[in-house]
Length: 151
Image (spheres, rainbow, N blue to C red):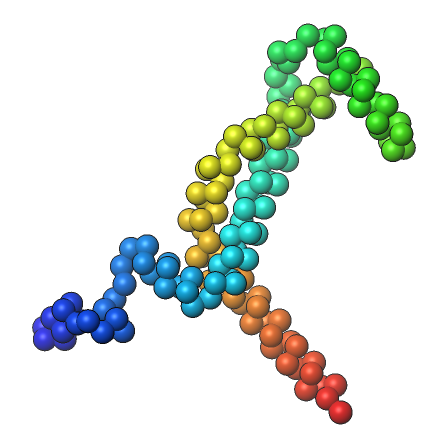
């Protein structure tokens, strides 16, 4: 009982247990590079994976386009000129590929606040279980290689 009271009323920060979000702040202070790396990786994963998922869902379900066919044909004609210039095959004039790409991109951009919140929430876990072990493995490998090739 005495040690609990001492911990609760102590001014020494090493005796007090941090609670809530402060534990994550302490971890960030200890390893800022791993947390920044984890956030960057998560941010990119939450951007790229939904982009493909939304595009393939749109391609699979083929929702009706809200654009007139004339607008779709004009857009495809313009893109076909670019594709021909680059050396790619042309799209069908009524192909919804570009509409699906643009819609996927817009949905991912609109979901940015949710993606950022998810990335922030998962950053401590990603740093602890993915980034730090990979960094330690790379560190051990480089030390082993240096020792092996040391003259």
